Structure formats: C-alpha cells, structure tokens
Amino acid sequence: MSPAVQRTVVWSCRLALIGILLVAWVIAINHSKIAMFFLGSPKVIAEHLFQWFATGKIFRHLGITLLETMLSFVIGCSLALVLGLWLALNDILARICDPFIKGLNSMPRLIMAPIFAVWFGLGIWSKVALGVTLVFFVVFFNVFQGIREVSPVLIANARMLGARRRDLVRRVYIPSAMSWVFSSLHLSVGLAFVGAVIGEYLGSSAGVGYLILEAEGTFDIETVLAGVILLTTCALTLDYIITLVEESLLKWQAK
Amino acid sequence: MLRTLHERPRTRSAKGRTGGFFTTMSAAALDLRGITCTFPAPSRDAEPYTAVRDVDISLGDGEFVAIVGPTGCGKSTILNVAAGLLAATAGEVSVFGTPLAGINSHAGYMFQAEALLPWLTARGNVSLGLEMHGVARAEATQRADAWLERVGLAGFEERYPKQLSGGMKKRVALAQTLVLEPRILLMDEPFSALDIQTRQLMENELLDMWSADRKSVFFVTHDLEEAISLADRVVVMSAGPGTKPVAEFKVDIPRPRDVTEIVQSPHYLDLHRRIWEILKKEVLKSYERGKTMVPVG
Image 1 (spheres, rainbow over the protein chains, first blue to last red):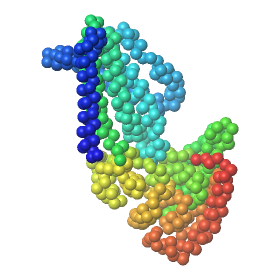
Image 2 (image 1 turned 45 degrees about the vertical axis):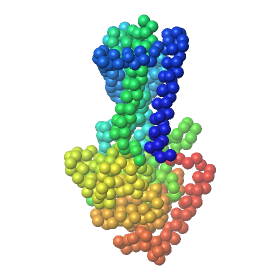
Image 3 (image 1 turned 180 degrees about the vertical axis):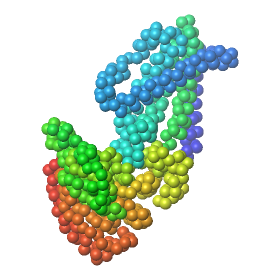
C-alpha cells in the first residue's frame, strides 16, 4: 500500500469509529430513559458547544483556563530551571535537598488544591500554584539530569577552547538541560493544563473547569460532556503545537 | 595523606622559580618533569591507582612527537596534564619556559571521543572558541567559515554534528581547535574511530597543515604506523600502571611525507621493526596484566 492510500484507510477507519459510536449512542438514548439521563444527547451537546461559541460566552472561560495553563508552565519551568541548574552544579546542596525534593514530588499534590485556594483565593493564582507544583518537578528532574549527563569530554573541550565557568553554564550546561526540557514538553504542558482544570473544578468563579462544576451541580450532563469535549480538543491542539515547536527547537537532534 | 598527595606542585614551583632562570635555556614548547598521577581509590578496599609515574618528556618548539604505548597505559593522562585539565600529583609542567597553572592557553586539544557541541552547527562549533575569547560575532563567523573551507567543509557550515559523517566531524573538530591558532597541538588518538582510507586522508591533511606553520604537536596513538608516518620522534611508553617512557626513536624520514606511500620504504620498515620489538614487550605485559586486573580508566 502506498503511504497516501494508507493515510486514507487510517482516517476513514477513525471517522467510521466515531460514526459507529454516535449511532450506538443515539440508539441507546432513544430506547432507554436511564441511558438518556446518564449519557445525554449528542445533539444537545453539539448545540451547547455551538451556543458557547455563537454567543461568545466560552471565550472568557477558555481564555482564563489557557492563561492559567500558560502561567503555570512558564513559572514552573523558570523555577525548575533556576533551581535545577543551581542544585546540579552544587553537589553538597543537591545532597542536602535530595530527600526534600523526593518527598515533595511523591506527595499527592492534588490534595494541595484546597490549601492553595485558602492561600491564593479563588482567582487564577490558586490554579496557577497547583499547575506549578505539577510542572515544576517534571522540568526540575529533566534539568538536573540534563546537566549531570553532560559528557566530561564536552566540558574539557569547551575549557580548552577558553570557556570560563560562566561560559560553561551558558554555552554547555543550559543548552544541554534545555534539550531534556524540550523533550518533556508534552508532559509538562499537559500537566499545566491538568493543574488549571482541576484547580478550577475544585473551586473557582471562571474557567472551563468552573463551567463543568456548575453544570454538575444541576445534573446537566450535556453541558458537562460539552466541557469535556472542549477540554479534550484544547489538549490535542496544545499537543500538536508542541510537536511543531519541538521540531524547530530540536532540529539538531534529527539525523 | 591523600591531601598532601594531591597538592598541586606547580603552584609551589610557580612561586619558587620566578624570573628567567628557565627561559634562558632553550625553551621547549612543553616540558614535563617527574610527572606522577595517582587517582584516589574508587572504593575503600581498593588501592589508589597510579596511572603514570615519574614521567620526563619534552616537546621542542615546532616538533611533532608521537607517543605510543599499549591501550589504556595512561597516554591520555599525560596529555591531560599537559593541557592543564588534570593536576599532576607530583612533578612540573612548563610551557615555553613558564610553569603551567590552570588550563594551558597555548594548547589546542583534539579529543579521541566526540567533543563537538551537538546543539551548535559546524560554524557555531568552530566560532565558539573565538566568541569565548571576545571576538565579535561577525568576525568569528567569518574566520570560522574560512577554517571550515580550509578543512574542506565549505557548504556544510549550517549542518549539525549529527548530520555529518565521522570524518567530517573530525574535520570540524580540527578547525575548531586550529581557528584559535594554538602554538601547541595535543592530539589524543584523534583519528582512531575513522575507517582506514578516511584516516590516511586526514593524516596527510594534518601533515600539510602542520608543515605550513610548524606547531608543536603531541600526538598520542596506539598505532605504530600512524606514529612513524607522522612524527619527528616516537616515544614508547611502558605498560600501565605506573607508565613511563621506555624508549625514544628519531624518525629521520624526509618530509614532505605521504602516509600511504611511506609504509613501503625500507627505512620505514626498519624503524617499524626496531620500535615494535620494544613496544611488543609492553603490549604483551599489558595484555598479561589485563587478564588478572580489573581495567581502570
């Protein structure tokens, strides 16, 4: 099979799967009141989604969720980069901090969400704080590893070419750490998004997570599912954007 | 105990001998006197490992010296000491008559392993040293491109190391080192990972470049053929641990040489036989020890 044919087959199978699922769904709710209550109607869900965009109501909520995601990612990454660099280049400090970092990382951090709500209020910052705790560790461990794994030959070579400590950090350690961070972008951006939504879901006044929470309060299953579909689409889009960014940032890794 | 062992002797000598006492004598490019390198034991029940012991070796200005010895005999250790990357446990290094402290800024180093920065292009790698020495970006780039052209890589400036073949990477590494115009060149089996044809090509090119400005070269190799075809002088090292030079041969084969043809000359064959007689003993010794010892380094 030629690649073009293969692609057609793959895509038509995917669409067929969605079609079968939708048909089964519609049949189920037409024959059972209980299914109708639990699953909602795909038509109503589609209407909700359409209404959200048509009235523009969704943009504020979506904007807030994405803003929280971005802030979590940027703040989490920056903190992790600075701390990772500092600890990786300072052996004693790394040994002192090791158990604390491992402890904080193994702590179930979602449980911190209510505490963050108390500390930072119900606005965006409590969600950002939750997102940061999720993003930080992924990036931190990658930075740390990225710096520890720099080949001693690279360091020796850079030193022979005249690198002082400052040059080593700027031209060898940071690029090496960044390559590890970039390779975990999918995970860290995904976690920033999860942090934002979960944070909203646990207590907020705006955001897609808030819409879902609100609808759940009135057993409005269709709105809940519309929110879930919207979030899934957002996550997929983010993931696609990262793939594009990755390709340009890591082109030196391609053969 | 360990502390005193690892004290840097060269700081002491730097204070002790100021003035032109040594410089008045013919200043060798590199002069290693009584170099001993002991590495601390990796675990409590292991012995400290002495890689080289009491090594005296010198490199004249403009001279090409090859250091041969069994694999893993501590040849690289000697280069690292000469480069200032490794502080000797005992002994002194002087560079053009001045005691060495810290990195040897007169020396360029070509490593055996891949040492290019993978996230920089060929051009970025070559201009790196210039930029770190404060040369402006535009000029650094221009000089880098000129060197890339000189090593036959014009048109490959934008390639990343991963996109280059083994031989091309070695050329970039050569340009990266030579663009800084070091007076001393330290080479640690730089071509050992290449296939034989590429290798001979690179050796000839190295000879061409060397004869143009006669840098002082320390060339470490385990390959006797390579050593004789390139060098003015071949130093044979003993098997490790506690490696030291055991013999020295002058290579009086006239230059310019072609490494592909030189191997057939009777003069070369005679030298090869004489050096191999000594080297062979060390290689066998090293092999015997290797069977009973856990290899270190």
